[in-house]
Image 1 (cartoon, one colour):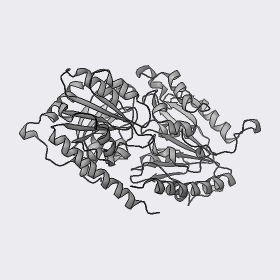
Image 2 (cartoon, chains in turn purple, yellow; image 1 turned 135 degrees about the vertical axis):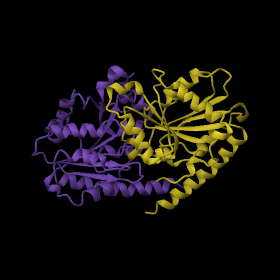
Image 3 (cartoon, one colour; image 1 turned 30 degrees about the vertical axis):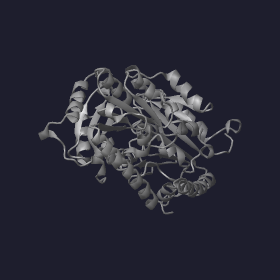
Image 4 (cartoon, chains in turn brown, green; image 1 turned 60 degrees about the horizontal axis):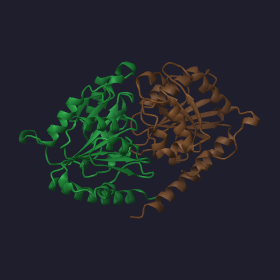
Length: 233
Length: 233
């Protein structure tokens, strides 16, 4: 079986579309973030609580991916911002073409923030550039502090790690220091936030991070290198 | 891009090896079970607590899959039964060839139960037959009761759904009746157990299920059709 060449071809086709998307986002002044986690780590609840804290004049839109159902789009549409569901029908990740198609009917001039909720999967989405400025990995404390070592590619490629569901900390065997240490063994520069979208603890820090990423000061601006072009360890 | 034909070829090669494994397991009187879940749903803890309750004379062995690390094999080896780690190095699922290779140094005559812990992923492992008698899907109550609808393939193909981490039920928004209902909408005949490997609640029911599956009475024996050969909905 000769699988690698075709995988390379698929990825390079994806990279081509992702590069075009990245150029469009840049031209329109849109910050695009790609949220990746296991199923049930709390991406949708985090997005709900983020949108709930936004003013009505925020120029934000959401793409939300799932293998099946449009449950997440229906949950997120309640907040009045543009939301579109991408149902992959079996695929274990979003790809750049799915994002390109989902954007077709939106005027990008109306946006300055695009939040993409990927399919719940800690493996496959790490390999697919969607044209985002940064990948964000969300790890629920219910999942265990060893996950950065077991699934290193996404922790290596993400700019930010959000440790979610911290309200469960009293009830689960999760060592916060070990989680931070394990993620930094894989990716020494990764930023780490802790929050509970349910209790609201840590939400302000996340909103501050988002605001700083949307409007970086010149000194704090990141180098113009897409994190997703790095090779996995 | 012409991706489907190669995927079909890969799967049919996998199915060929899986069929050979299934024949070997049958010839040696081995029950092989393939445990599948999201990362951090508690497969390893369930296996630990299962092995802890087994007598020393149990003829059981474990294969445990991860993208990286042999942490799980080390955790499971403490119980004195044969354990082997399969590190996929990036792949999002185990395949039949990995299982075939991992078994090469074991005498199958010494076993009558083989438990395979798949890579933490609710999507990709559903498509790969490992020669198992049954797939078992483990869903932690921390992940949410909507997951059977979002990731239907694995719930359709699994014979048993284990709802794990029930000790967290007071602390998470999980509706047990909705989870059961959602899983049965995808797969009306799926069996469902609830347990907490941490508290021990429900472990006896799981061990009873395992015992009945290992030594079925003639009336209770399942039809000799591999569940993994069914098509996804």
